Length: 468
Ligand code: SF4
Image (cartoon, rainbow, N blue to C red; front, side):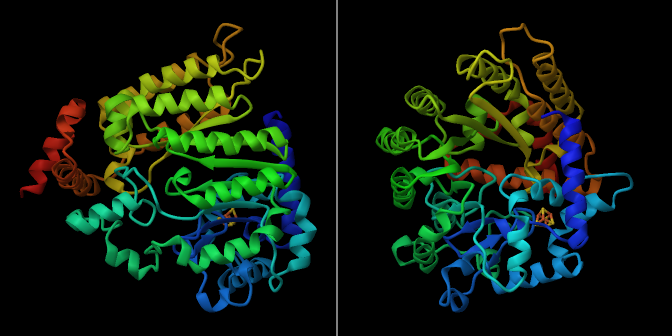
């Protein structure tokens, strides 16, 4: 669809929302991410998560989504009061000029717009099934990426139990902080009341889903993932887009098991489409350093195995672009280009099974790309130019290049990183870089300077600040 047509659609949806109230948003009714390992959820992904209490869960498993707290937020929205937790959208809507916020964009989506009247009918009292569900059953994961957290990765949890907290200014990973937020995970999934409630709710929930995504931890390590996949293979939902996240760094036995389950769903033609989302933030040993646990050889073997074994599956690379992504990023982009052309869907220039989705890391702040110095910013700009030169308008006619979606993400990231940070803030972050990664090297047997010689200046500046 052209940009103009899309804008017209957003405008129509915006007007329809305004007719109810200037704060109404369908995502609060129809979109949810469930973190079953600790009972947290949010609708949509912008507001902080909140917890379903065990008390409210007793009455109805759908309170995993329809919490008392969320119903209060829905009430505010219907009454035209902007909930504070949605300030991400209010900021955009209050910027001078005509803008579409995620409130308009999400409410226009195919999992939301056709169900407008259903939300109105449910109001703020009735329970409602989401159409877009993302679920994490457990924090089990064999990776402990530098920017990850213990309630999302069991390997991170194990390390912190063994060695304690990192002595950085940011305490985002500290157990005391997570306990205070009620985010510490329930380790034994078989005793987890939130997982139990999910399975009670699932048959009624499944039939209403338009998008369903399994996330983690590492979903291929979790038995509930296979239970869901078996259910989908036996129960048609032809309007469903099914998605599964995986680090593609698990052993062959699990990749085989996953490929078998997904293959059965493809054969059954029970769903509209299937996408596997995997993660890579840059290339080679720098990528292995950031995503600790990643082995590039194993990753590539698993990746090709999935793409060849499951020819109808789409594959999206989620790139959490961070300060350490910059210096090997060109090799990553070259690989993506090669892969896009190897796994074409058709002869269309735009049509590959491979998508690159770049988002920028916001936490921990000492790993953010807006700390980049001029040399690193120049590299980012050069990578953006490389992507532009390899967009469909520029490349040879039979090649698939980077799409507008991919280019816009890189453009947005580069503009954001250029904005930089204040000198005082930068000093704190440089110090944290040194404190965090020198301890990371000590615990994990890695070597920051050997892996990232291009970052020596930042490292030395952090070291000097840490010793003051
Ligand atoms: S108003 Fe914005 S932040 Fe709030 S739920 Fe809707 S899209 Fe998300």
